[in-house]
Length: 238
Image (cartoon, rainbow, N blue to C red; front, side, top):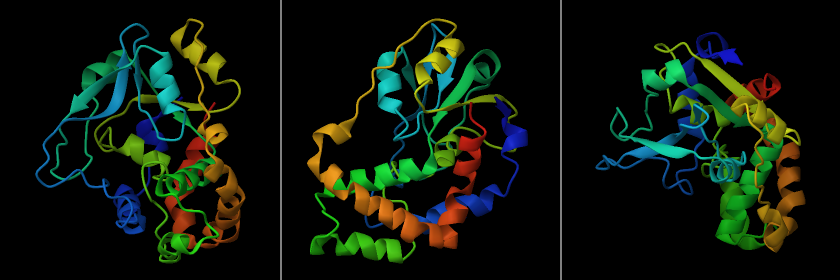
């Protein structure tokens, strides 16, 4: 468990600018919520039973956790037009335990990149995958929410300069059920779903995705800077 004001003490403006700079606008079409869209969005969920507030992060078992516990979405209209800029109400900050599930950034990015390839029906050895490779060479590493840095999901939900609250960082591993049970103070069981088993294209692309990550992404300063906080979050998770 960390204090947000202590842990996330870095240049937020620089971080947000780097995220904007490395988003593939060609593929991440819903990165902006739309200039005329004042519709509420759900960036966090609450459980009245367990007095928990959960900030879901894509590719971190978020669907499994939301489906396994009694979470309900809290909808808010962004404070700043055309931006994912929400705010956890002070009531929840005061009376609820706030947590996120973190994942090893390497496996998460590889899995997220693999997923968008599957959704686009791209096999990396085929010519039609050339455009997405060109995006990578243009230092565009964020293709959708599954490759968006984990910190960004947290960033959407609070203003770093305003709030000082405790955040539980829970590592996604084989002990996730036990850790969530401790948080809930009651035995819980997460119903896991592995889409890789059903998707032959993901299986085919997996080793290529690993090679791209290890041989290319890790050699790019922008990539390292972009996900630096994710590695720190994961390292400090229980």
